[in-house]
Length: 118
Image (cartoon, rainbow, N blue to C red; front, side, top):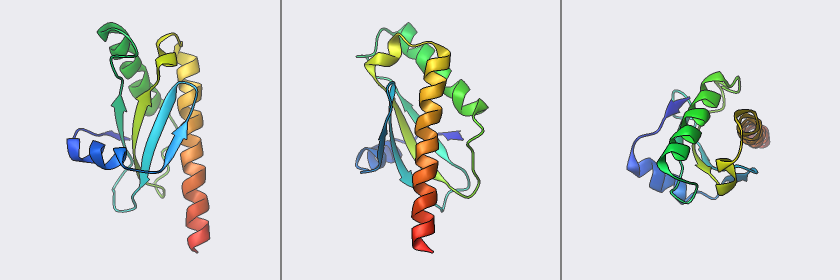
């Protein structure tokens, strides 16, 4: 997955109706088959904690995205991973499990929508 940097994409994702809610994350996504690979943005607001905690959460999310084996070349999407307040106290394994759960759910929804189209 490639990280998002453009503000226009974040505003486009903010208007999306496709949302997955986990215990530690809210993942807003848009299916997009025109992309060459899936893209992800990370948002951790100041409500989560001080800068040290926010940066630690961002590093953990990036690590999970790098190590995740959910990169399916046929299902491409853009997503914004928004950390909730509960993520401040969570350890790495809990964050990994919740984020992989959310990504798995997105893949299942995209696969089911592709099957309905055929």
